[in-house]
Image (cartoon, rainbow, N blue to C red; front, side):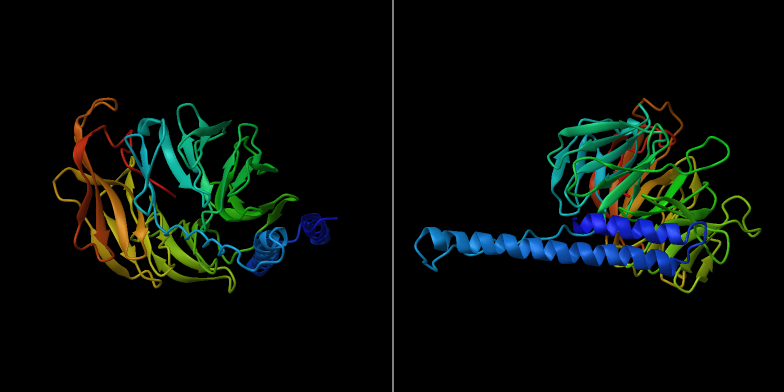
Length: 382
């Protein structure tokens, strides 16, 4: 029996033992961390054995000589930060580029796995498309909705398939795993709100995160109040959330929730869509309608505003934004003018700005593009 089989059997036994009992985050985090520890240990053992084979085999073949070649240096980890799709090219955080055969008009979201594969959610046709690290098309999967959810470490991406089951593609694996669907009463598919790791997904009904989905099914998730998870910090200890509030009936309010203590540790009704920086020390937020935002702001872990970037021009708006690194943002900007979606009537550019909204630097000079209500000419990775 393999370690993976024993792990699956053990999780199944435990899930059956607590069937229908609400889970606290301590249970969720304990399971996820145990899996990660075992994987790291197994990976370390495998790497050690492989290195030993590489080092010792030449010595045996050469009659015991110890003049073996030096071990190759491990590949440097990819720098944290967002990738950007524009005009058929994905620019990665290290500045390298990958051509992909796709029109931005068809793309609603993008994720880039740690193995280099590029995962796109397409509206036309409604599907998930996976490209290799070289930009070649690997596969296309029919989807119930053109939405993906990526883990904080970019190690896994999940979506709801056409048959309403959940698919999880993990870095280094060829095909996505299949998890049970998210049961709801109204024939919708449910929502994947966060991917804690490949085996643990936070799910809900689109307004509230209320379940933990694993290969054995879905279990109730207990929180101190109704909320929807928007993002998870790199260490998993904080959730960026939204919740309904009378202070803002249109957009609701945002907060930082400590799932271990089961309490909201910070609140703000002035921003939406909070996303953690790569180091987990700040968040960006935007609020707007029809894929357009008047500004992008940054916040500390008390949700006190650190800075704001507002594009210049009476009709200028922010289309998409993400973290270039721990202290800079990448912002897609367009000077919005009314026009048809398929007509190049709007000037677009990509800028890099500091944490406080200062020193905007043009990364991609202004060029023609389409109406931002329908097309994001710069798609920033999740």
